Length: 112
Image 1 (tube, rainbow, N blue to C red):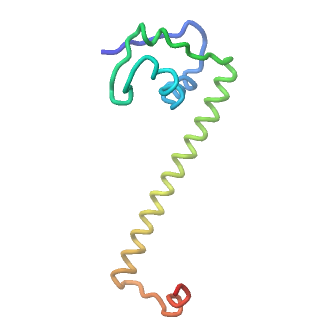
Image 2: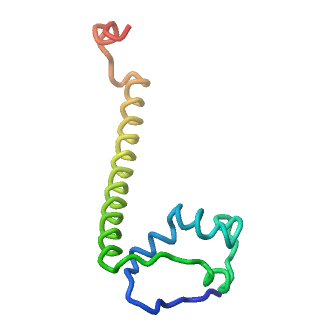
């Protein structure tokens, strides 16, 4: 079971979703109320309500969330690209190490 909190003012859900997962929030704000939150521990409602959570203007929240979401999207794309390169490298190494592809001796001498 869990508790759902609703804001009293208009906020950017994306901004606070990212903020509550951030290192800043976990280390600066939650560490005062809970030890080991990353290990699955819980925080009580009174402890959570005692935390002074910053509330930037709504437009600023939306802009920050937009930038952070774009950065996250780019990082996800780069991770996918990295995985494709790793797969390609494994395939190339397999072909080279099994002798399916031969390397000319002139190429090897360049790197000696």
